[in-house]
Image (cartoon, rainbow, N blue to C red):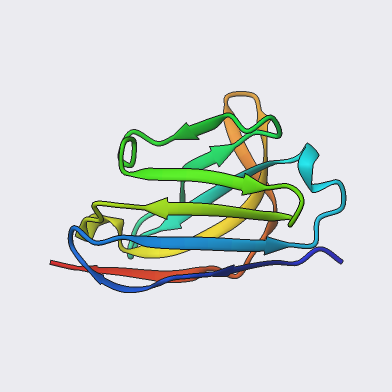
Length: 120
């Protein structure tokens, strides 16, 4: 059974930083593209960052220049460094293994999420 566990969420003031971590039990972890999704209150869940098996990052326009995704294949970990946080970054952040299906990313394995709240 695959487990993904997010940590590092919390309450932060606008302009602050948080670092999210995701511990996984995915076998052959290094082969997977990993993603961070965000679900804001009343909005659809969106992919904000992804990192390929080769370490290449991809970001949603809304977080480019502020968020950095990284991974440690030796530890089966993926991270999301979030800087210059804004109130619109508030939401539940989920870690997931992802793959391209046509023009869209689809999540396969999911964590339970960690809450990030940014106060103005």
